[in-house]
Length: 417
Ligand SMILES: Nc1ncnc2c1ncn2[C@@H]1O[C@H](COP(=O)(O)OP(=O)(O)OP(=O)(O)O)[C@@H](O)[C@H]1O
Ligand SMILES: [Mg+2]
Image (cartoon, rainbow, N blue to C red; front, side):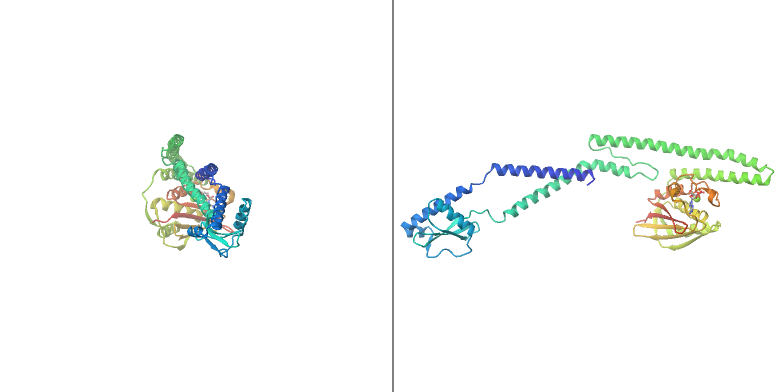
């Protein structure tokens, strides 16, 4: 019971149940039922009168529906009630025997009262017992209180926590570019103030991210001019080996600048979404990766259509497949679907990524220690760009090392509806 809504609901249910319980107790104490003793005295005095009249005038008692029989009334004897009435009669000075059997109606009993001549006066009296089914009525009363208070409390708790849920939804819908959706500034004053603060924070964050992006793009762009000059000068280096080292370093710098600019472009440019056949796209990418001279092959390619920007999605998947082909010595790519999502798996038999570095590979410019293996030129931006793009289409990229070696990259994107 961690949610505020449930806590408020339970608190309200307990409060309502306690108030109703106390009010019921107070009402029961204030509105006393007629005393049992008073009823008993009235019954005994009625019996005394009947016995008296019966001893004087049989006809009169017969006229009021009371029979005088040689035997008591038949039926299941209520021992407790019989003893109780007989004792009460004796205390009141009546030397008789009273037998109680069930009456013609549910709240009545038949009393057979022994007369001094040995015959029995059979009459119907009101029952002293509480009406049957009292326990059910009480249980129903408690049940109604609990159900009623639960409904009212849940409704109240939902109403009270509604603004908080709106804020929660807005905050958890942070876009892949870190942008926070506009939080509605409604509800009680405290909630409105929180929403306003979140909206302010979101605006500041947006400005900060945009200026960082502009900086990266400008740096990448401005590097181009001095690099072109350096390339020109490098061409004049006479030592062949030295010249080719300079040119290869300059090429790598070029690639880094390009990737930095394209990362910014991915964050800024948002191409329009359309239905993309993932199986066809993968076949095309693998063919072009093969034509570029890399080792790549397709496995199972099930039909799967997703909603995405085709150019960006192609770039993302190409980055991951090229990684498996270069860093992992060869890529195997399959497409499957599981009802809700399309699943692309990219497998290789390379060295994989050390578990402790796994969390960093999506960071821009991160490259696993190149000294351990043969190196491939690259900026360390391929995976950052790929994840950025796939997250924009509500997808995820997961990496796991394979046994005994290799890397499994799993890309999950919701199927188009
Ligand atoms: N399939 C893989 N097997 C082993 N290591 C990998 C694999 N994929 C990525 N890596 C490691 O993760 C690092 C980051 O990959 P990323 O694609 O971001 O950069 P890159 O390939 O080095 O450069 P580029 O920006 O040209 O793609 C790589 O340098 C590599 O060390
Ligand atoms: Mg790469």
